[in-house]
Length: 140
Image 1: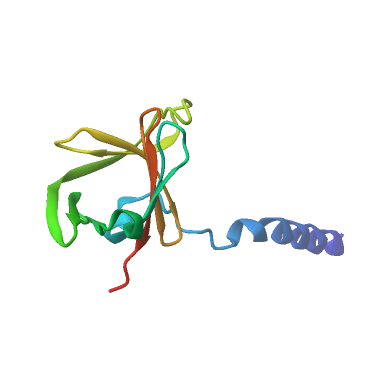
Image 2: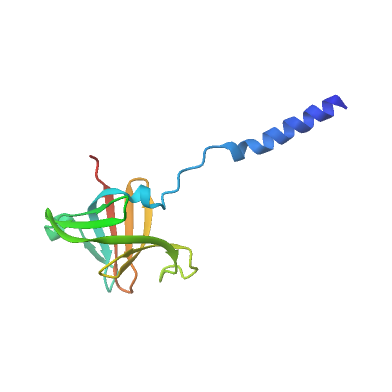
């Protein structure tokens, strides 16, 4: 009987170990977005085949997100936009389930679906025939 008790405890402990594994930190929080992001490329357009890069447009762009939801956009080293941003779950033209990560840039009303993967940020315009913009986190 005593062995049965230990066997049960061993089985229970073994079945709960996967639940104790360290889970990845969710990247869908404003904290993970905080920082500076360098533009790498934009893809889309009416045919979906337009590909733009800093080299092809002769333009550098970076975005800055702060922990107090401030948003800054710089083009060729000049600040071109200063406003705030909101992150929320909502419907997207790419996924109408209501579970998409949505970013709204206040002032302009620009709305993006966004995705963070490691140190890469993807912003997809919430409109047909628009673009997905790829950024990488800038190292300080």
